[in-house]
Image (tube, rainbow, N blue to C red; front, side, top):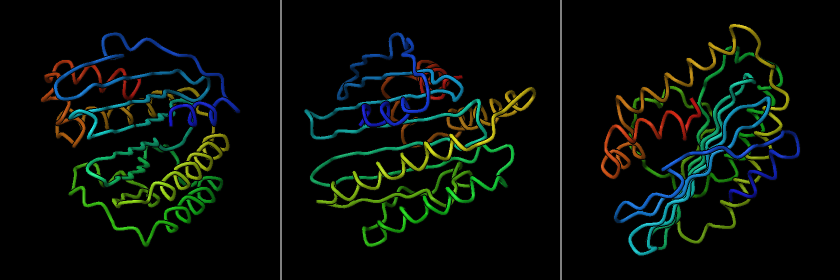
Length: 222
């Protein structure tokens, strides 16, 4: 999955691998976590996370694309396999300065159509979270068995549409850059303060101090 993301972004942006230090390869029983981070010139930050646990019974991949230089939403994608089931979570977080851009509305509609293509697949009940109000309409969470082909197709379609979205989004300048950074920081600090499924797990595995460092710098690129 990571290569698919890199190839899609590399068509339009220069990408540079960055150092995520001790978080590049973490073994914290019962999980093995590999993290890759990248700087995307004129766009922002990319984090690709691979997790294996419980002797390979649990496998998870996460992609986090954080635009700092374009007025576009964060794209966060999780794919988890466990006990014969697969979970598909595609979240789009509102970090807009101006959401009323005509190009964005067109891309939102296209992303919602991709979401609609998964409507017959059961919803994944991930519970209510403090950050739900930041979710944009194309956010989708599904869980099923033997839906890998549909999930792969939906992810690749969403990724392609998202890349077009950020390509068409307005370039930020001056104070807008700092305003965008503050919006990303609001989400990061909110996760550290209020928790979330991934943050809660990392807190148990790594402790709160290391988790804060990981979330701020590796995950969000702050």
